[in-house]
Image (cartoon, rainbow, N blue to C red; front, top):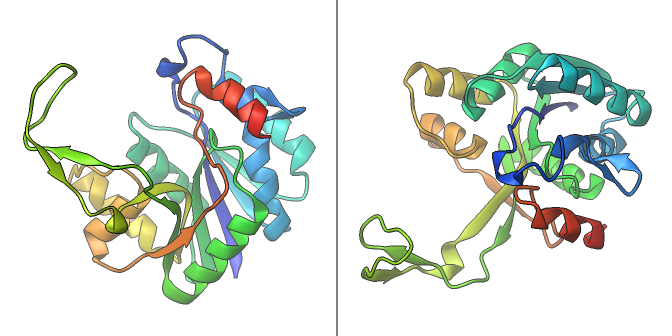
Length: 233
């Protein structure tokens, strides 16, 4: 099947506290962060399409230069992001012009460690079952507060069955235009969703294939993540 990648580049990075000017443009092992995951996608879809959802014109120019160097065979388009992540994803999906014979991957550019092998496994799962997500089993004990709580609060804690808990990652991939329809309805109805699978399942109530990832796939969120990434890579 044909493949398209919605590459989300436009986060404002407030939690980076100014450690870098733009985390997705930071060099990592000689390659800008944004290009790592794009290169992995292009290893599986050599004639694929990348839709970059960018923050502003300055970032767009720098992302374009990075991808032209490392993903020269891909067809690359740019579309500006929206106010919230769901708006940015919808802008990207509209620009992608999805078809039934295509797989649409949605990926946070701030996750540079995703591999071509992961893209391949996701593609196979979504081609068969309609939707798939890269994820890993929850290994820590997770407790749920009986009521919303903040640091220092004393609250009753509820146990959760760890065997049923998975931590979601990206890429998340969907066949055809189902994810476009899902996001159209999410935005129109002002629904709160935490990721792309949330949007898909909220609208269609369909199962999603879990593709277990045993490799680190951290998202650059706080300054400490930068040193961890350099060590891992």
